[in-house]
Amino acid sequence: MTNYWDFAGEDDRDDVRLSNLQYLYYYSLSDTVSIGAGPNIIMDWEQSGSDRFTVPVGLGINKTINIGKVPVRFGIELMYSVHRPDEIPGTEWDLRFYIIPAVPSALFGWMK
Image 1 (tube, rainbow, N blue to C red):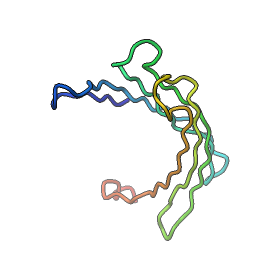
Image 2 (image 1 turned 135 degrees about the horizontal axis):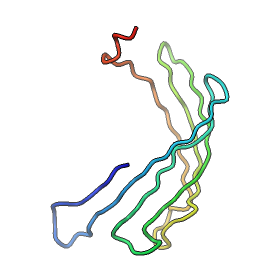
Image 3 (image 1 turned 90 degrees about the vertical axis):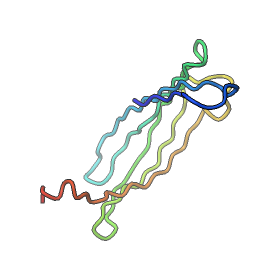
């Protein structure tokens, strides 16, 4: 969970009080392929009533391949917001593409 607050700046700017909660659900189909998603629930504490929440659900697929010696995960996810503020355009659907390389870390070098 991540929270965002404004604390400085111009007095005529809108206040910012947001929370972001990411939940994850994945199921491995094989060693290199999985299905699932990682949607973000957004809570805008400056809004009133049900306009505070954006709640997406979705599904995606990802595959891990080796590029040289580095494993890289490629994925696509499609999310639909089952609950969203009425006044904010563009919050109904979310399509995500991602590329995530597994970068070796010196911190875990002792585990070799």
